Amino acid sequence: MSEKKGFKPYLGITFLIGFGFFTMGLMDPLYDTYVPIFLSRYLSKMSLVGFFMTLDNILAIFLIPLVSAWSDHTYTKLGRRMPYILVLLPITAFLFGAIPYVTELSLAALLVTLILLNITKQSVRGPVVALMPDTIPADYRSEANGVINTMGGIASIVGTIGLARLMDLDTTLPILGPTKDRLPFPLGGLFVILAVILLLIFIREKQPDPSETQEQKVPILESFRNVAAQKDKSALYILIAIFLWFLGYQGVLPFIGKYSVDVLKTSSGTAALAAGMVGIAYAIFAIPSGYVAHRFGRKKTIRACLLVISMLTLLLFVHKWITAGLPNSLRLISFWAIMFVFGIFWVSIITNSFPMLWQMAEWGTIGIYTGLYYTASQAAAILGPVLTGIIIDVFGYQGIFLFCTVCMLCARTIMGKVTKGEPSEIQNAAKK
Image (cartoon, rainbow, N blue to C red; front, side):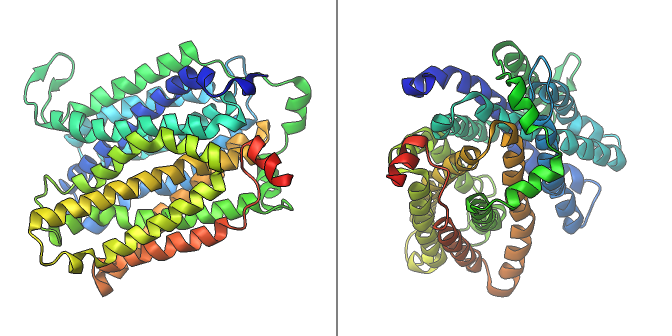
């Protein structure tokens, strides 16, 4: 009966779950921007810095699916996900806040802290993500994921424009000591602690029926094999598509700032604005994209967005030449405009792909499907920059946009084979 009321009754609880994503999202831009600087104090070779910066993606491939599956088989009075959240998120907050302080000690102290941080952060990510589909009915998960992605977009903006600026604040505070090049990290950690408190107070996980619990208690590895061996290959096709579109996205994203400096001749201070355009679009359009998909179908929405993105990246491929005669300010504005439109359609893909997988899962396998999603996306995040780095060395920057176009078109083709994952009313209408 609750599913007939629409998404509105679930908006508040989705917001609270999304606050956890928001605070975790604050850590990402700070980590990605300043940890390479901290590492370069000790390491002169950027290849070594790059290796340690991919550590989180490498650990994510193993830890997110494993811990997500463990949480599927965890039954406590607090629920399946909350025990992991209550233990791992506070540890993550402490380790994140400690990064600039241990940097002053030694390279060994910094590396140990980064390794432990990435272990705890990637371990807790799966249970945090699975908390939403555990709580929200299947038909409204696109809208709910839109709320969560909106908060992720806001977090990206706040992290780059708000907290990052505090790196320049030069004062001394009780307990924290000197704040210059330090303050955003302990503040980010405090936000994470606040998220844990809010989740503990307000989130009540669904308790399983005894019969449902017995049905779902199967070995973790067997659960993975069951997903791969399903007669309907829709879940497998979506995972392949996810890998392909993240391969294109992650292949371009790390080089956008450098492209802005080297090709568009921006200053280093404005180089991040191209990625910022994607973040702004994320914040504005994540919620509407969920409603659009609920109206027209998730598969149709994703395939349409993949087609538009492939056209946009093709436009970026030729942008250098077709804007060569324009003033540099107009070249920059046109590039940022394309990136903003890119963000609109990219967030529509991200918002609706997760709910498609969750729609195929049973109550006891949501964590497994969450882990498989992250396995596909994190594998692409490791491989993508390596491939596009080679492409830049051989063909120049323009080649990465063409690479992204090919990846998006291949993902669109694979998505055409998917037959499941829609909200129930759309799925039933398709059967009729």
